[in-house]
Image 1 (cartoon, rainbow, N blue to C red):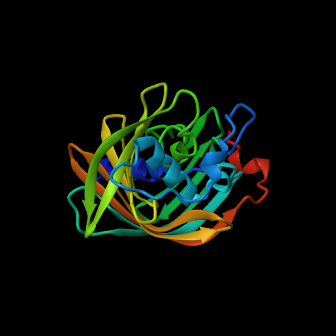
Image 2 (image 1 turned 30 degrees about the vertical axis):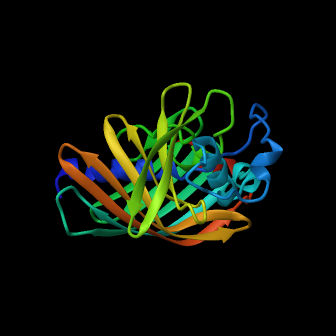
Image 3 (image 1 turned 90 degrees about the vertical axis):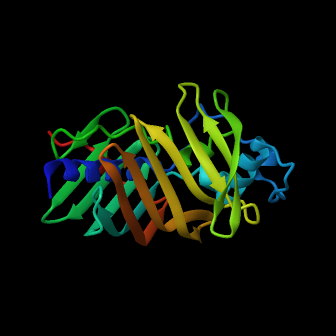
Length: 256
């Protein structure tokens, strides 16, 4: 495999890590309004974008989702370079706690990656790869902030997913970072989300999810990264999940 394709797969793995990171509540977060943790919202054609976001937030686990302190995902992956139908099998581990992330992807002999973001600084075991983006800027963590100051929720056109017409909305932060969410109107569960990042279009489709300690966790999902060279594609299957477990400080220490 060419070096460029390896770096593109690394980029995909890095964005995967950030887009699934948990949101750990800090003292500056605005408390969730009581309505945000109430009974599920019935979605109709008249449901506003803000109500759609609130419904998706509740379906994701509400305050339990927002107050997650840590998450560990372990599983397998099939990575597809641009314009290739041949996958590269591997394993992955993602450890997140608030803004801190530890990612490992082992797709030997093609590449083995370790990436750490300690909340301020990034480290990569492979030189010249894009830095790990702050994990609270896009993806599922944004859903936990939909009603906080500085975030706006706007409408998007509905989208078809098989026989289901998904309702859609966009959450944008004060810096202009935006994530588009597509939800099943029957359950309010997020089926897909996508964003623009560093000139790329990046999307995640959740194929299977399970409730773990009151929080929905993606167990099978695919990701697609659109680029001028073509689309890089990856399929992930989670085998083990650990939520809110104590993590050693050394997990997020950047090597010297």
